Length: 106
Image (cartoon, rainbow, N blue to C red; front, side, top):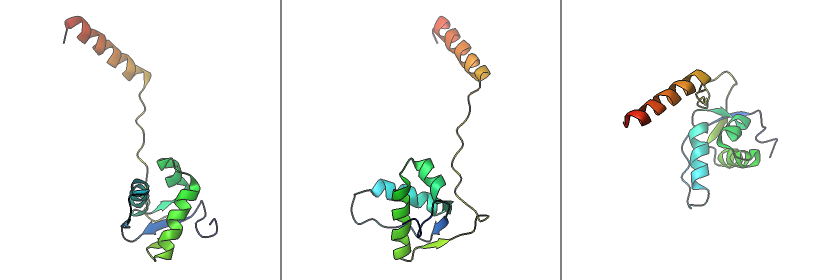
Protein backbone atom coordinates (compact mmCIF):
# COMPACT_ATOMS: atom_id res chain seq x y z
CA UNK A 1 0.00 0.00 0.00
CA UNK A 2 2.89 2.35 0.75
CA UNK A 3 4.16 2.02 -2.82
CA UNK A 4 0.77 3.02 -4.24
CA UNK A 5 0.11 5.90 -1.84
CA UNK A 6 3.28 7.00 -0.02
CA UNK A 7 2.87 9.20 3.05
CA UNK A 8 4.58 12.10 1.30
CA UNK A 9 2.52 11.66 -1.89
CA UNK A 10 0.33 14.46 -3.24
CA UNK A 11 -2.95 13.51 -4.91
CA UNK A 12 -6.14 15.06 -6.24
CA UNK A 13 -9.44 13.32 -6.95
CA UNK A 14 -11.41 14.27 -10.07
CA UNK A 15 -14.99 13.60 -8.88
CA UNK A 16 -16.73 13.04 -5.57
CA UNK A 17 -17.17 9.32 -4.88
CA UNK A 18 -20.70 8.04 -4.34
CA UNK A 19 -20.60 5.49 -1.50
CA UNK A 20 -23.12 2.69 -1.98
CA UNK A 21 -23.50 1.97 1.72
CA UNK A 22 -23.52 4.03 4.88
CA UNK A 23 -20.40 2.29 6.18
CA UNK A 24 -17.63 4.88 6.52
CA UNK A 25 -19.70 7.40 4.53
CA UNK A 26 -18.64 10.31 6.75
CA UNK A 27 -14.95 9.39 6.47
CA UNK A 28 -15.19 9.03 2.69
CA UNK A 29 -16.75 12.47 2.35
CA UNK A 30 -14.22 14.04 4.72
CA UNK A 31 -11.35 12.59 2.70
CA UNK A 32 -13.03 13.61 -0.55
CA UNK A 33 -13.44 17.20 0.60
CA UNK A 34 -9.71 17.39 1.27
CA UNK A 35 -8.48 15.54 -1.82
CA UNK A 36 -10.83 17.36 -4.23
CA UNK A 37 -8.55 20.37 -3.62
CA UNK A 38 -5.42 18.24 -3.80
CA UNK A 39 -3.40 17.30 -0.77
CA UNK A 40 -0.61 15.44 0.92
CA UNK A 41 -1.50 12.04 2.38
CA UNK A 42 0.17 12.52 5.77
CA UNK A 43 -1.10 16.07 6.22
CA UNK A 44 -4.71 15.07 5.58
CA UNK A 45 -4.43 12.01 7.84
CA UNK A 46 -3.20 14.26 10.64
CA UNK A 47 -5.86 16.92 10.03
CA UNK A 48 -8.73 14.41 10.04
CA UNK A 49 -7.21 12.36 12.87
CA UNK A 50 -7.33 9.18 10.78
CA UNK A 51 -4.81 6.35 10.54
CA UNK A 52 -2.50 6.73 7.55
CA UNK A 53 -3.62 3.28 6.35
CA UNK A 54 -7.22 4.51 6.01
CA UNK A 55 -6.10 7.41 3.83
CA UNK A 56 -3.90 5.08 1.77
CA UNK A 57 -6.86 2.71 1.22
CA UNK A 58 -8.95 5.67 0.06
CA UNK A 59 -6.20 6.63 -2.39
CA UNK A 60 -5.86 3.04 -3.65
CA UNK A 61 -9.63 2.75 -4.20
CA UNK A 62 -9.66 5.97 -6.20
CA UNK A 63 -6.68 4.82 -8.27
CA UNK A 64 -8.57 1.59 -9.03
CA UNK A 65 -11.56 3.60 -10.28
CA UNK A 66 -9.33 5.99 -12.25
CA UNK A 67 -10.63 8.91 -10.19
CA UNK A 68 -7.30 10.23 -8.97
CA UNK A 69 -4.12 11.77 -10.24
CA UNK A 70 -0.78 12.58 -8.69
CA UNK A 71 -0.05 16.27 -8.47
CA UNK A 72 3.12 18.27 -8.00
CA UNK A 73 4.15 19.58 -4.61
CA UNK A 74 3.82 23.19 -5.75
CA UNK A 75 0.27 22.80 -7.13
CA UNK A 76 -2.67 24.17 -5.18
CA UNK A 77 -3.32 22.04 -2.08
CA UNK A 78 -5.73 21.60 0.77
CA UNK A 79 -4.65 23.82 3.65
CA UNK A 80 -6.08 22.92 7.03
CA UNK A 81 -7.69 25.82 8.86
CA UNK A 82 -5.43 27.38 11.42
CA UNK A 83 -6.61 27.31 14.99
CA UNK A 84 -6.87 30.82 16.39
CA UNK A 85 -4.45 31.35 19.23
CA UNK A 86 -6.05 32.98 22.24
CA UNK A 87 -3.49 35.21 23.83
CA UNK A 88 -3.31 35.70 27.55
CA UNK A 89 -4.31 39.33 27.11
CA UNK A 90 -7.47 38.37 25.21
CA UNK A 91 -8.31 35.88 27.96
CA UNK A 92 -7.94 38.60 30.60
CA UNK A 93 -10.21 40.95 28.66
CA UNK A 94 -12.88 38.25 28.29
CA UNK A 95 -12.59 37.46 31.98
CA UNK A 96 -12.92 41.14 32.89
CA UNK A 97 -16.06 41.63 30.79
CA UNK A 98 -17.53 38.37 32.07
CA UNK A 99 -17.13 39.51 35.67
CA UNK A 100 -18.53 42.93 34.81
CA UNK A 101 -21.63 41.36 33.22
CA UNK A 102 -22.21 39.22 36.31
CA UNK A 103 -22.03 42.23 38.62
CA UNK A 104 -24.33 44.29 36.42
CA UNK A 105 -26.71 41.37 35.88
CA UNK A 106 -26.53 41.55 32.11
